[in-house]
Image (cartoon, rainbow, N blue to C red; front, side, top):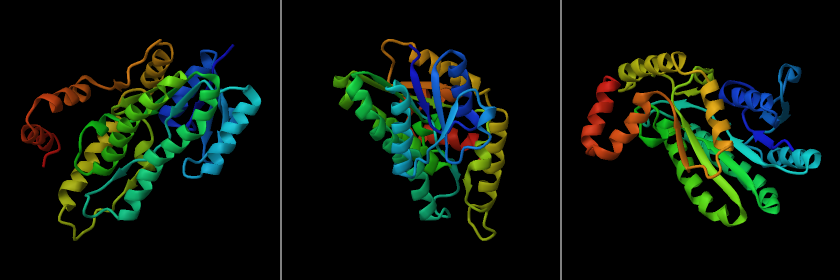
Length: 267
């Protein structure tokens, strides 16, 4: 019997690549979008779900259970980007990105877990970011949301293990997607003390994304995790230097590592 998969944020980018790949491998895939349109262009079933609205989360999962009788895998992929100096970024926008990237993912897990407990089986994969392993200049809020989701994954894994449920997370590096278009960009204020450095780093971030890896690499990684009997808690998918930067953070003195990052970002 084909496993039933729910993938949030599947209308484009990494989520769509994962959903398309798994549907081609024979999985019964439900992808989500806040406002599904042109659903005939997808090789999987696209349904409505907004991670900021618990009623839509519950409705989507109820629909899947009603149709399939089970939910085997949840890929928590929906998220948003944010850039800006901490001082200049509106606090309401900070709360918004935490609500999407952290609390939205938690609410989807909370909705999926009762069915997985009932089955005594299930796999939850939270999509985080290599940026979540370090505080990056002008991306501190994004780093913080993804770092928090990594920690929540660790805690949830221990809590649900007695019910036969596995929880893991996958941290991608830079991928060639449209994430930059969907980010909240704090404006480059003319009077800002960070004007020149922030603008230079915005240009650098966009260059990294446009020159990023093919999202199919993430799809392959998710497929391998699904077919691993005892998956690890943390996975990283990215270029050598992106993954090596995490190793360096573990072994180098804090200020030395900070200096390397500042040199990289020309600060």
